[in-house]
Amino acid sequence: MMKTKYSAYTVFAALVLLQLGVSCSENYDIYPDEYAKVMMFKESGVKNITVYSPHAVSSIPISVMKGGWDSKSVSDAKVRVMTEAEFNQWLMESGAGYSYLPNNCYSFTTDGGTLEQTVSFVEDEGYKFVTLNVFPPEVGEFMDNYEDVSRTPVIPLVLESTDGLIDPNNGDMFIIPEYKEPEVGFLNGGVCILEDGQNSYTLNIGLPFESEWDITCKVEVDPSVLEDYNKNQATSFGLMPEDAYSGIGTVELAKGEQSVAMDVKIDLSKAGFRNVVPLRITTLSLDGFEIGDATALVGIDNASQFKINLTEDMIVAPDCYGSDGKGIPGLCDGDPSTHFHAKYYSRELDSFGSYLEITLKEEVSELGFDFYTRSSYGNGYVKRVQLYAWNGSEWVMFSDCDAYGKIFHERGQMGSLGSFHCPFKFNKFRFCVIEGDGGSLIGNTSAFWSCGEIILYAR
Image (cartoon, rainbow, N blue to C red; front, side, top):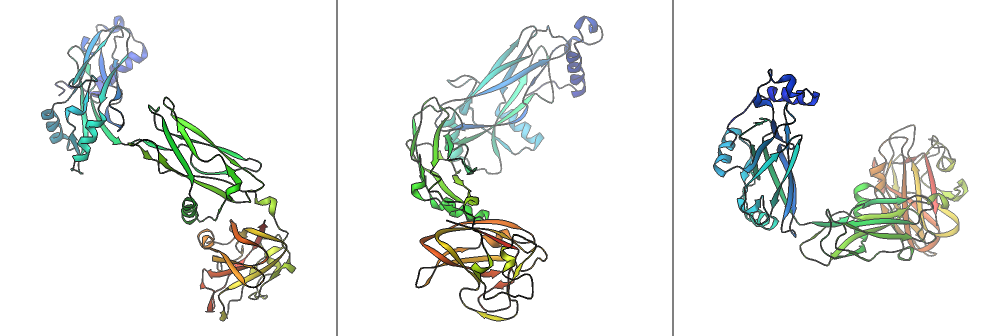
């Protein structure tokens, strides 16, 4: 490997002199010739790279730098792969958790077999690039059969010179290739909630590099994406109606391009509020590629346009405890500091739990809420709510939401919930609290709930 090592301090001093612009004529009698030129890897130590399965060759640039006090110096260096014997000796000395990646996986030429490369510096030349070619098919074949999970395969490089110094702290490089099938996915996925008035969003679908092929990608609406998101994030976005969006389908990522745009358009008159379109890439036209894990949810939150002026006479609350808080007016007086309180002594509640029955002036099929917890006390927060609509002959449940319990844990909190869709129109519904922090509100229970304010949105 490296036959001669010099102190890092000496090298550093030489490099500082170079950076200060001290000429060789001024220091010829002070600094020996051996410090006139000092070479190093710009990225020494561990270098992680990714090689992709469809490529025959991945070219890895390696920068070699020249310093020292004589900028006019001419020098040669050599970048080479350690022999396996040298590498094993280095492992014994270092104790590193590496193993030797076989020579057939890389070369300094594209046709293989070249394990060293000369670097020549002329006057005033401070850096040079050499190219190490890594062969993904060979790396993939090796990785498929590699079983030692305790050691990471590396390509060990060393920098040498016969007419200059090598910085002892920057003369080795260990390249760790990660072999992957390239992912085609959303480059700007995740959740995008459009601002009021916006009616489109451009999703970009692409690769981590410029495509060398024509790839057709199919994008579809997947309700499970929304279900998972609501569950994991304690939200309650609704699924946007099918006739409210367009532009979703098949796109082609053309050869020579890294991404392709897909414009998702929203018809605001049909989209409702707090609704999203959950999207997933489902198929690709070529083998050897993976579909990225990222999904996309494009939606709107224009609930403010559908706010209902909720008043005391619209609400019936059989389980109201009037001696604590302001009673029913505490729900809708516009003041979150006043509160409603359900009864908290033992009582027998049916399957509707402790509920509010609200009658609207017009028929709707979609509800949303801004919900405030009580500001003066922490107990009694809501965990689970079921919504029932009256169809003229019976109560029909159309929502069972436990997002409340994931949002409300302390006093004075506010959260937005909805959209909740009913398959038919109604003008009377029940907001049924069936679980609070004290437990179930069904059957013989002393559990209760309280609320600072409810703001209702309906459409």
